[in-house]
Image 1: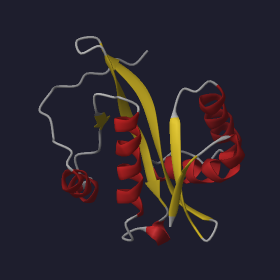
Image 2 (image 1 turned 45 degrees about the horizontal axis):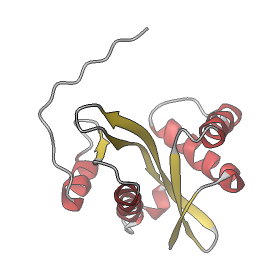
Image 3 (image 1 turned 180 degrees about the vertical axis):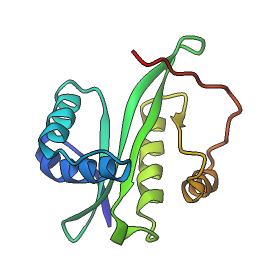
Image 4 (image 1 turned 90 degrees about the vertical axis):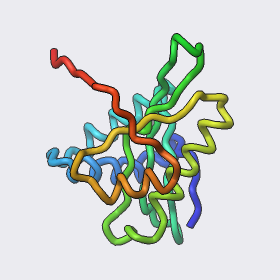
Length: 145
């Protein structure tokens, strides 16, 4: 397995993974919109994507978005998207993608990496805690417009 930072050259491959990720979260498949969304993120340098491959087959991806802390005056990264194909799960792909993201965050001088997962996603929670993420007790609010 090897992991690389995705560029516009990997757009097609990452689009397929991204669409599967969205379907996993009960969204309708829409390859065209997924491709346009990712292309915009890449062209505008609004996110960083790493993809895992084995024998030129894409296994999964992780997508990070930048955030900033005014108090510490440092960048943080939001690990917003993580997906591993069903047939590749349990082989360390997710863990390696996360570790690559953490290495990138450290190399970019970031303060840290934030992620969020569902209350019932116990497998992901175990993985995050195994890697060293600490569950916070902050309250999060969201306002839909």
